[in-house]
Every structure is written in C-alpha cells, then in structure tokens.
Image 1 (cartoon, each protein chain N blue to C red):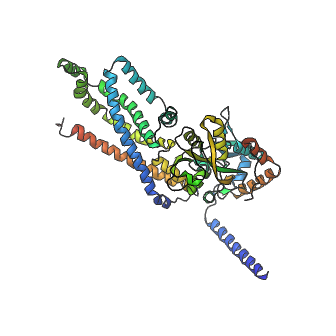
Image 2: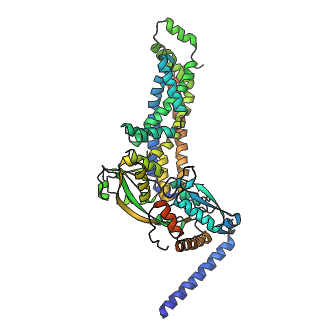
Image 3: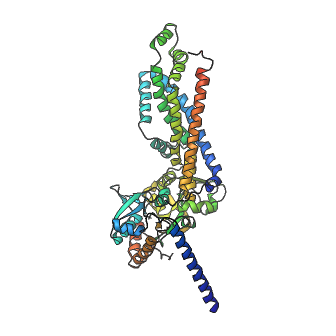
Length: 224
Length: 274
C-alpha cells in the first residue's frame, strides 16, 4: 500500500473533534441518568403495579429491546413531527438514548430484584411496610448492588451506541468525524483518532463507574 | 519565435531529466504490486468494479425489485458493456464514494461526483459525462429568494456532496446548517419540517417534490451548476486514458445524452472538455 498518513490535519481539527466528544459524553451521561430513573420506576411498576401496568411495562421493554435503535431515533426525529411533536436533533438523541437505556435498564434491574431473598420481603410485609417502602428500603439498594456490573457495561454500550445519533444530525463525535473526513478525504486518520477518543472515553468511564461502586456500596462497609 | 523554441527546448530537457530521475528512483525501490495497471487487470479478469450509490435520485436509486438503477448505474453498465467485461456494483453511501475507491474496493467511482478542486487533490477525474445544478429547496411557506434570506433558517445538507462544499460559502452568518449522512435523510428532514429548507441537486428536489405533493416543496434559487465525472485512483493513468476515450465516443454517438434524458427528463447541456 502506498498510502501516506497525514495526521497534521487531524491536529488542526482537534478542537472540533473534542467538541464532538464532549457532546457524546454529555448525551451519554444525561441519557444514563434519565434512563436510570425511568428504569427504577418501571422496574417497581413491573413488580408491583396492577396487571395492566405490568403488561404495558413488559411490552415497552420488549419493544425497545427488539427493534433497532436507529429506527427508534427516526421515529422520534422524522415521524413525531407529523403529529406535532418537534424536537431538536440533540434533544431527540437524548430522549431516544434515555428511552432505549430505560428498556434495557428495566430488564437488568428485574434480575437484581428477583435475586433479593423472599424472606426479607415477607419480613417487610409482616412489619407493616407498604409495597413502596419495601421497594425503597429493602429491595432497591440490594438489587442495584447485584446488577451494578451489568448496568455499568450497559452504560459503555450506550456511549458507543450514541454514534448512531449522527444519522439524525446530532453533532457528536461520529458526526463531526464524518464531516471532517468528507471535507478533507483523510478518512483513515480521522477514524483512527475517533477510535482512540472512544476507547479513552470507554476506559475512563469504566474507571469512574468502578469508583462510584466503591463509594456507594463498599466504603465504610465491614470487610467480609 | 526563437525565444519560444529555446523555452520549449529547456522544458523538454528538464522533462527528460525528470524522467531519468523517476527511473532511477524506480530502480531503487521495489516495483509496485499491480505493475500491469488497473485497466489490464479489468480486461484480464473480465470484471470492472464500480461504486453504486443508490440514495440520490435520479443518479442512483433502488428500483421496485430493490436492484440498483439510475443514470449513473446505467452509465456504469454502458462502460462495462463497452469494455466487454462483467459489471460488479460496489454499493457505497455518499460519504464513502471516494474512500471506497482509494481503498481499492472499486476500480472507478461513477456516483455523480462533481469535479471540484478539493476532490481533484485526491483522485483523478475523467471528462464530465453529466451536469447538475444545486438548488435550495423548501416548503412554499418559507420566504427564501436569495442567499441572504437563509439567515436564521435551518438548512439541511448532506455530507460529502457538492452542496456541502458550496452552500456554506454563500450562506450568511446566522444560517443554521444541519448535516445528514445521506440524501434520503436530508429529504426526510425537509418533508417532516425538521429543517426549513435544504440544499440538493435540482433532480433530487424535483423527485422529492413530485413524491410529496402535500409538502408543497419548490425550488428557491440555484446555488451553482456543476459537472460530474468518473473518479479514478491516482496513478491509474491507463484507466484514465480509457475513460477519456470512452466519454469522447459516447458523447459523439449520443449514448450519454440518451441516458441523461431518460433518467432526468431534462436534455443534457453541452459538456465541456476536461
């Protein structure tokens, strides 16, 4: 191969790439927080709500997990305007990512909820706790601890999957990279550097999530 | 007269020097792998690989049976026929047209690539075989008459296209430019009202207006007219020379005009020589 690599042009455009990476990070963390809260609510409703609500939550989870993320985004961005709901590309991306994460998060939380020993819940009932109190005081913390590694992996998947929102014109890292390589034709160089940035963000967020786990679940706990 | 002769003589001797220099450089470095040249390989393998971008009507589309069709696909078919070889269409998205060629996935890119300085720095162009105008299209209720009216409007563009290269240059500050990866997404954004107007080829604008009569889409103004041609990997001079001859002959016998007329319903303007 006679290709000559020219990374100088990437250095010239580094601020734009970092801007894109910053939006990727903001979208991912924002969608994680929104989606997480929604997932906890849905997980509660799925195990405690009336039958109709349980079925509806189950249907939502299956719908999100069994349809392509790109199609979900297209519906939010291109189809909803037909019924008068119009969102900016970045908002649509955030909403789409949060709804998608909530679907997976609900399913992940369910396994954690199922893992809480039944006698603890029965003990809560006999102490006169309401369902919400049992969920809040007995189930949620233990469930989260069990499924934390799965949730953390799902966050990294969410961040990497955010590259898809370039398709609806949200200017995150992949979109910026696509624009730069299409105007400079230096596709190898720009995609290499984008790969490096994604890798760095993934590793950094794994480290941060590990730190959060220690802070929330292990700090001050007696050694077992 | 005398002076010109001297100049020509000087030019020739320096050209000769340059040739010698190249030769000695070649002698020292190992010969490139494909020394036979791309044209020889195409004829030997009885197969030419051509890019097919199928999201920009009328150049490249998928027909009712999901098969590639359009003026550029017809051009590629004609090229394979004239070479007497089999055609292999390499499906690409608009931004991949040049990368796919450079990466060796295709022998030639025939995907409505307008001839620009930027592209000419990376690939070699055959003489143009078609022409297109870039227009700003939008719904009738947006009052846009000239470039100045774009201020404060959201304008959709497709990455790696002529409109991306030209519209931002004429757009006044305050224009909100929104980029999409393929023309289908740009059209969809315009039809669904996510952008106020969009830059695209006049044919693309006609096609989207014809298919969505309720969206009331009209052409606002013409940004530029450009000519497009086949792109060839740098150094494939044998193939470039063949393409020059090919365009010349098909211009003479009316084949290019017939293909253009059939797919665009517009007569082909006189093509300049590259």
